[in-house]
Amino acid sequence: MEDDIFSSTGNGIQVDCKIVQTLQKNFVQVQNILDQNKLLINEINQNHESTIPDNLTRNVGLIRELNNNIRKVVNLYADLSSSVSTSMEAFSEGESTNANQSDQRDGQKRIRSS
Image (cartoon, rainbow, N blue to C red):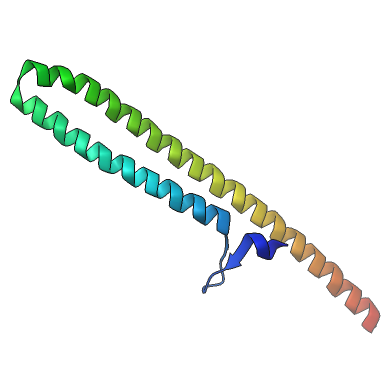
């Protein structure tokens, strides 16, 4: 059952495949937003240097868009953190359950071999 959720990597670490997909998806979204922010910042700087009133007025909207994008990035990272924490808790509980079951089986074997 856990094999459906967790897969082993070469170094012995088990990883939740859903978490890996979520990480990849969110990191792509973050990177896209950061790329967009880079363009916004460049445009804001150009508008500021031009000192043309219309360009300076346009910066107000660009800065709002930049702030919204930063908010989105923060939310994406918060979601990632929550997903990883939830997955690690589930994994730890699964390990604990498996260890207890293994201990119980070992105890049964010892009783039989006495």
